[in-house]
Amino acid sequence: MRGSDTVHEQLFSFSRLEDLIPATHPLRVIRKWVNDALGDMNGLFDQMYAADHKGGRPSIAPEKLMRAMLLQVFYSVRSERQLMEQVRYNMLFRWFIGLAMDDRVWDASVFSKNRERFIEHEAIVELFNRTLATARERGWLSEEHFSVDGTLIQAWAGQKSFRRKDGSDADGPSGDFRGDKRSNDTHASSTDPDARLFRKGNTGAELRYMGHAMIENRNALVVNALVSTADGFAEREAAKGMLADAVQCVPEGKTVTLGADKGYDVKEFVLACQRLGVTPHIARNIEHQGGSAVPEAIAATESYAISQQKRKRIEPVFGWGKLIGPLRQVMVRGLERVDQLHVLTMTAFNLTRMRTLDRLAAQVRPEFV
Image (cartoon, rainbow, N blue to C red; front, side):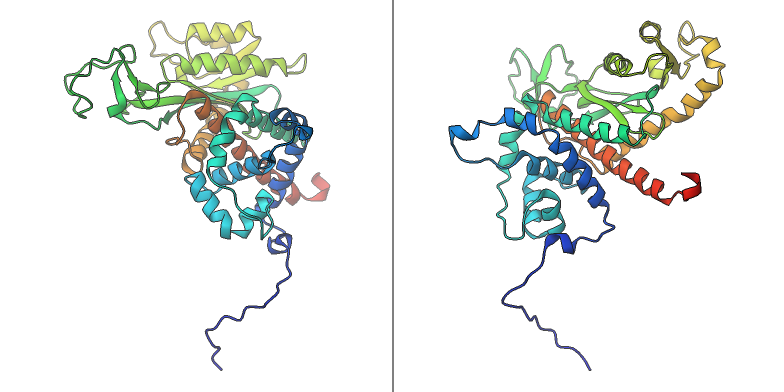
């Protein structure tokens, strides 16, 4: 017998969001890790807002905002406005954020108002570090073998906004720049002054930032990330800073190695690595004038060959950040905001990677544990 195409709604329905989410859903373990990290950040959150005894209207809980920001990266939601629209009817999103079925969804402008607060108190950086601490507790991090690389991030600004700093563009932004010599010394974007006109390889010159990341070689988890203005020295300068931070956390007596591509094969950078006590496992650029800066004795070792294989695992990190995450072209302006979004994306990548590692560990037979 054919059923009727009708909707029979009950006057009362009793169900919990927790019961609607499958027990094996990938977000379950991720939400647990995120909640543990946010719980350890209570002291920071107290500093971000006025004390309760001073009164005032309660804010949207920062924990809910940060969980919502992670969701936006996980599910490639283009904007905060679109995210809030989906939260209205998506039960999974409500459960992950911490909203009940009947809770009112806040306005998308709340993200803009709180973004500066998160930047001022480095809340996203703290979440990134707490997530790494979770991975370290489970033995998923290597403390001595790292790889580093950089990628270009297209700014949320067009070529027509790249105007002369002295304001002598008499004809206005016509869009035809042929025959007009433009450089970062004489021009700047009126839309995003921190963006730089930059090209790399066979790409055209566009307004861009440069994102940097350092991974550990055991499981390809990101251990440091930052964004800088785009120029020919940015990758190596950022790598030196990230490497100095990594060396401080290395147990005494451990030999630290750093894998990188040929762009880092510069004498000044190799010497900087050696001054930090780091063995430079950098791809040798023998076609460079004067030859490679990496000693042949290092290049002949077995550990160097292993690092050259492992360093390529950083490429999927940037690929994920641009395909799934928002890093292909960011929709925020300013170096600090782009840096915050980059660190948030790397945090989301680590969480998805950790979930995979957790699932693989559960599949190991007991006799091999």
